Image 1 (cartoon, helix red, strand yellow):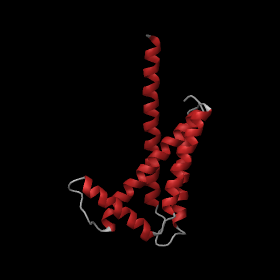
Image 2 (cartoon, one colour; image 1 turned 135 degrees about the vertical axis):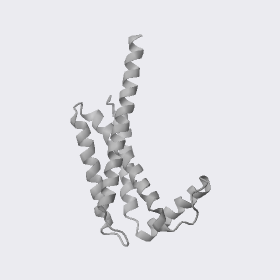
Image 3 (tube, rainbow, N blue to C red; image 1 turned 180 degrees about the vertical axis):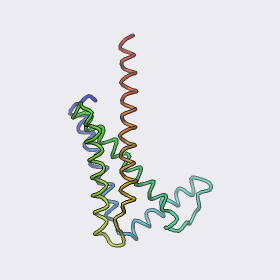
Image 4 (tube, helix red, strand yellow; image 1 turned 90 degrees about the vertical axis):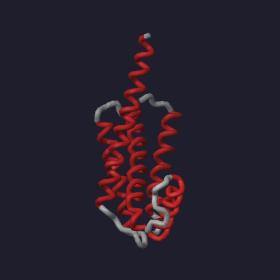
Length: 155
């Protein structure tokens, strides 16, 4: 990936905002986090027919897991973007994944100190899978764009 000051700035800003969102949500007490999940669930129930309105918080566990997966997929994209600009070696995938998994462990560690929250190894696994998906998706998109640009320059 081509590195410029502007791109580095955007990438770092995206990465910091993503981590602030992830860790900020982990700092929310269980009651607040549950209320937020219920609010999002209520919105989804209005937007998608068949999604059960008023589902108890325990039933919205899938929604919470999908949120974890999605926010860490975005983190994987941000890390891949950053290390893609900094390193031109195959190790960039490893660096991106290690940083993403480390962020997942930190996320769960934060929850040990928050009322009505607790760490979960399953959540670290879900978060890590999200990171890997983000890395893979951005890599595929980058290769597609790069090959398209090469084809256009050959014409």
